[in-house]
Length: 176
Image (cartoon, rainbow, N blue to C red; front, side):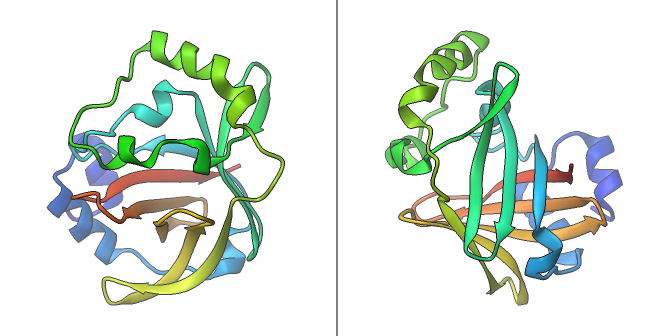
């Protein structure tokens, strides 16, 4: 896959194609990450493709290196900060297709008050991944790192690296 635009036109990549594209993109520093970012899927035939959108995911907000809201969800007309530590980790690493229907999304919306938080649940550091040092979001209390590469000044390709998950999960962030 030669460019991000080519990948978007294609609609879905294999994990190998997505990794090859990821490797061509520029690294970014922590200051570049600051602000709120709206998320979108980046399909790679991963079993989690579409799950965040089905559950009302909005994106992420980076306040500083030590203060990150890793999961913002839409709840009515407002954004809610979710506590990722309350999401059962085995659901992410188990070998089954998670439900992604509108009905499950509505049920998740009803659960939001029990899994929201006022605390920051992640931080950022520069880490090496696949031979390049770039901004990485590290979840507090979970074995998950989101590594970012720059598509352009307002677009990032993210890769979720979770211990126990066979292939990485890709997503896109657009600067608000």
